[in-house]
Length: 310
Image (cartoon, rainbow, N blue to C red):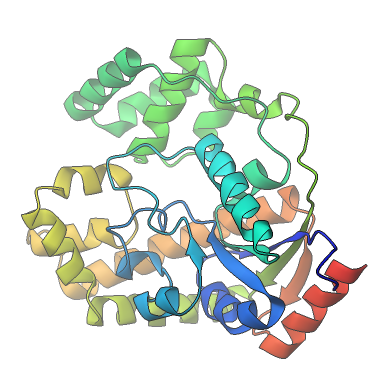
């Protein structure tokens, strides 16, 4: 690929625990690529162990972008992410290198590749009222309210998903339109670059094995200590509001509500459920080259080079 040619972007995506992070680290340098986070939890600088973020050593060895862009408590949206990736990609291309998105957040990927139909509104007053109701009533009654206002949106959310239920209610109550309506609007004119998208696909039975091994590794290698440090810093409730898999269970373990085996079992279950939702999304929403995991780095490099030179 000549230096004069404007490179396209690369996206390595797939459900959680398919090995995207390690594979991206193995191929980035040889492709002249810089890794850009495409994960809705890895953008928070306080969350390392429980999010599967690249290690600090890996991030120090080569450029990485957006992995520590926000602090927990700041509001991350797909619209913000799309703009942040556009800015990072411009800087990467300015160095004659290639942006490489890595992660499993489908809506974030869509914000970059095709754009969103319009940024749903944010109304601080409505948000505060909904949060108060959430604390007072719990998530299930608010999920029922959302089901009356936005049946399709509610059907796609777990009844205890506090953060997404609150956001969906905020949008529909402040704008009169559900999130699905906003997502259907004509996207803004696409930027000039295009993206070569590769999805790692793992058989469900093998994926469950990977999930169990990763969960055990996280609990053995600092998840509890990381969570306790956030508690001591007064950030327990902010962390709880994220409903982040692993951190919820670590908090419950620290508070005596779960034993270690029960905490790991719950993490495995929630991660498997997340993977199922991600798999469905990628199957129906993304035009990708699908690669059966495990994939050797040399094989992925060859596929990416072929796509970039097509």
